[in-house]
Length: 239
Image (tube, rainbow, N blue to C red; front, side):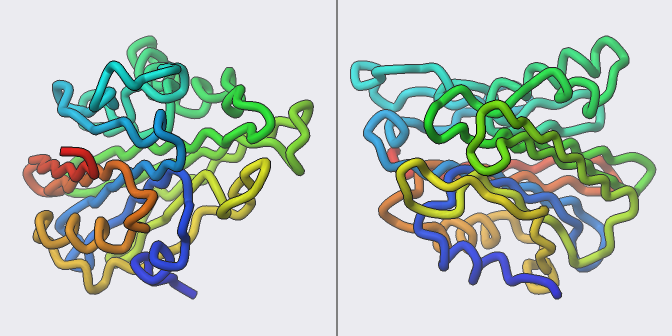
């Protein structure tokens, strides 16, 4: 059963960070989005900015940044025709591995969940590859089991032949808590059947679905599977 991503997001007051990869209903476009939500002043004091073919997080007000670790990183980088999307500095780990001729999976095998005890936030990652009018993607979840820092699980999900009108969504958290409860499911199968192909309309729809009190930043990329042309859109709560 497929999930309506907009209804899901509206039901989640605090999903943490989330990423989605999928194919448009007409099979012409790959669609990716990545978002930040935050509760602390340090987390909310961030914006997405363009950085070459990708994006970086940066402090909106540098004087209010108290701890840049786990906050400042490159969520999106490009390697050839591939787009890497992650919720931390493992973006660079994957990029450097691809440069060496290694794989997405082998790169992430060396990483663990985030060292932010007691939450031990999961690391979520995706690699979208497009070529010759087609696409495939791989997703990764690195997390504790039951909040035990001695138990690190690496989960890989491969989608070599994604269907038109479908995609998958990962997030870091289930909601509020102390510690914050980690997402404990597989990537959520979502429909893109009514998304259309207008990136401006789509990013507005996603942004409006995120909790207004906690949303921080949103990035959307569409990739034309025939031409390889990429279009990016960004929304920041702090402008």
